[in-house]
Structure formats: structure tokens, C-alpha cells
Amino acid sequence: MSDLLRGSGPLPPPGPTLASAIGNIKPVRTRVPARTLTVILGIGLIVPLFMLAMVGPRLDLGALPRAWVVLMGLVWALAALAPLLAATVPPRGEVLASAARAGRIALGATLGLLLLAFFATVDRPGRTVVPGSAAEAAWHCLRAGLQVVVPVLVASLLLLRRAFPIGGRRIAAAIGTAGGALGGLTLHFICPIGGGMHVALGHAGGMIAGALLGMLVLPRFLRS
Amino acid sequence: MGRYCDGDAVAFHRLYTLVALRILAYLIGLTGERALAEDLLQQTFLKLHRSRGVYIRGANPRPWIYAIAHRTCLDELRKRKRRLFMLTDDGTLPREPRATITGVPEDAVARDHDAEPAISLAALEGLPVNQREALILTKVHGHSVAEAAVISGTTPGAIKLRAHRAYVTLRQRLTRGRASGGGA
Image 1 (tube, rainbow over the protein chains, first blue to last red):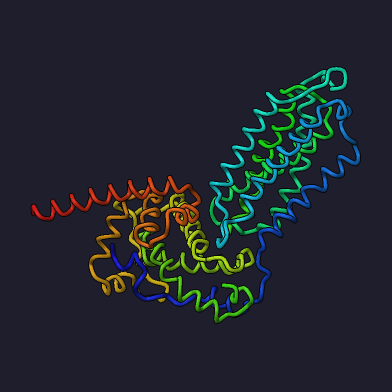
Image 2 (spheres, chains in turn orange, green):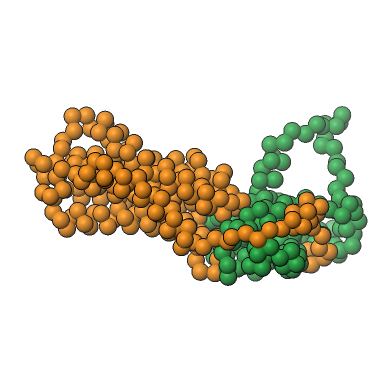
């Protein structure tokens, strides 16, 4: 293969625009991935805590098996943390997080929670609410979940601006999925409506809606 | 890179000297045009300068700079695809004289190098961009498959497949070229 392709030959000097930018160089604060992750998570938890304080815990919480409540809570938390971690914290010694990996993790988390919602939702007849209109109830929860997604997207937009020259769409989807899972975690503790279909559409559906919203809004800001 | 982020202009020039030539070579491989590649190199370093705040101290900046170059190049190639051209009277595209960033006509620079680069570039030119980038990153610039995957925003498996396909196509072309050259 030729030397030209390997990188020999004359090196052009920095052009006038670049030279002038370098002439006015100022120190900048560099990124610390763990701090970015913590701040995004912290901002993402503001709305859930507010909702929990305003609405209170779900009415059937005491009647549900404690192990199931805790285990599903952990699964929701993991589904929020894993895509966010993959999107914001690159492997040691690298600047770029792998967009492909983040996208895969987000997809896996969404599919896993859709399946769990369908097949592993526990109800307590008499205490768990059965909705009059399933679609209306799912839409209500989906909207509540999206309220949790928005601050996560805004925080990511500010903290990860220009951080991803490549794969911004998949990173945005992973961040949106994480926001949706945070919404699902919130709804797991406040929504008394039962049925696998409702939890899958209204709660886990928030992860899909979050991913779509993220892909719509974030990529242009994430791109270098 | 850390000192550059601290506002040290000398550190930038050192970084530029260390990596710019390889990035330029990568861009030449992708575009097939030295003048365009030099323009994209300037854009790449401008983008790097604007986004230096996302650098993580202690990390290797090379794959990141390659990724910025990759994105800059893809954007330019897409822009060119959409661009409208005015045809000449005989229905062909007008030939634009090309020059390097220093203003020297590109033909003059090309003459300074041996004939081999032209052959290699011509062979690469017909390959799809994703195969070309996989081949250049792994076989020419010596990046690992994982690094190349991060630069291109894809999976290591996809990079292996693209590089292999590009390699097979190139081998076929070069063999065909040699056979036709020998027969003449």
C-alpha cells in the first residue's frame, strides 16, 4: 500500500481559521465521565422523587410480595443505569463510548423489561386497580414516564454536547431508554394499575418512547 | 492533549505534528482527493478545538480524532452527493482545477510522489466508503478492529467483514489489472 495512504509526504500547516482559533486558546474544563453520569442520574431523579412525594406510594404496595417489589425495582434501576453507563462512561483510556454497545444494551434492556412486564407482573385482586379504559390508563402512565425522560435528555444535551462525532443517534437512544426506565421505576412504586398489558405498554413503553424522543432531539447536539 | 486543554498552544502544534499527517492520509484514502482531504483536515482540527472540553484526561485521543475526521468526511461526501452541478455544453461535468491548502496545484504535488499512490488510490476509489475506511484503518493505519469499530461507530464484527470484502475486491482488481497489463 502506498506511502501516501500511510501518512508520509508534506504536512500542510494549520489554515488561517485554525491558526487564529489556536492563537486565542483558553483553558477548558475536561470531562470526567463518572461526574457526568452522576449529574445526569441526579437530575433524572428529581422528577421521580417529586412524583413520589406528590402522589405517594401505590395503594396496593403493602399487599404485594415484598421480594417481587424489591426485585422488579432493582431490575428497573438496572435498566436505567446500564444504558446510561454504556453511553456516558467509555472504556478506560478511551474518549469515545461505544455507540454500538450502548445501543445493544438499550435494546436488550427494553426487550427484557417488555417481557418481564408481560409475564412477571403481580397483581393483588381487590387492591390493584383495574382500569376502565386500558388505552387511556397506558397513555396516562406513558405521559408520566416521559416527564421523567425530559430532564435526563436536557442534562445529557448540556453535559455531552459535541462528545460523539460518530454514533450519536444510538447514544441518544440509549440515554432516552435510560430515562424511560427511570420513569418505569417511578411508576413501579406509584402506579396501582395492574395487568401485564398495562405495565408493558404504559411503563416499559416509556423506554421505547424515550429512545425515540432521544433520537429525535439529541443527535444534533451530541455531534462534534 | 491534556496540556492543550489547559490552554497551551505549543501543545496543540505538537499534537498537530504528531497526528495530522496520519489523519490526512486517512482522509485522502476516503476521498481520493488531496485538496479536499487537506480542507477536511482543517475542519477536523477546528472541530477538535471546539470540542476539546469533552476530552477525558489520560485517554488516548487518536481514535477520537479519527472519529471526528470520519464524521467530517462523511458529512462532506453526503453534501457533495446532494449538490447540483451545471453541465458544460457537451453534457459533461466541468473540470475544476484542484489545489492544496498552500495554493499549489494538486497535479504538481501529485507529480512529486511516485506513481504507486495513484495506483493504490485508484484501486480504492471504486470501493464503498465503509469498506474503504475499514481497510484503511485496519490494514494501512494499523488500528485494532475494536478501535476501528469505535472510530466508524459500528461493531468489530462489521469492521472485520467490511475489511475482508474490501480486501477480496482489491485483490481481484489488482490481479485483473496485472493480467490485462501483462497481456497488452
